[in-house]
Image (tube, rainbow, N blue to C red; front, side, top):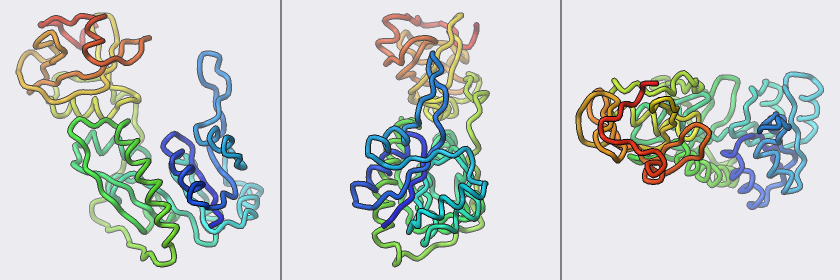
Length: 304
């Protein structure tokens, strides 16, 4: 098929690669514009932009698709279909209507649960036992369109958003290729009205750990916010991100180390920290972290 690809972050790259490998003609790649990044604040192309250039594809990064000129240029591509995955802009109706077979979205949840911006984070933070990928026919509403393909996967007991993100990206790439192959035979399934939840964008104010909460809640917070923005706590005067954890045994004063191996008491129960990162340093596994920053039993977290 002649495909317009619309995506921006790392999550979208395997999908673009899969479409190219499957032999589809990529009419153009749409992504977010380059933005200042790094210490020098030089403009840096997005992951999709960079990969598309490597593949020799036409890249477009308009700030908006609301203008008549952009909509005319989009329609002039004469695409069979647009594939959208984590693009980052709302698509006006004129854009949705332009491809002959419409716009297909790869959404990382089991719709109608977790419509919106951060479905992977929210699934882990809410303790969902499973999530998945839906291939959805896009319409004007927020992730409200009929579902063409759906596949579920279990969320691992120690899985982080980063790890689940990688698995779902590969799953989405495989599924969109299958959907395009059988597009004329797929029967759209209208989303049920019951069970709708919204995955609001992650706010950095959600990242500070409140050790008075239960171990189950804190473990979900740590895994759900890893690697970004990263749940954090204070260790003396140092701010420490907690990037991987598991539920552990033990009880004690909330926020206090129960041993010298990063087992920390919560309001109820305890968590074992598996990976951590001090401000200005790289992420480290617990054993490596403790070699540089010993945390003896009785150390209190959360106090500056």
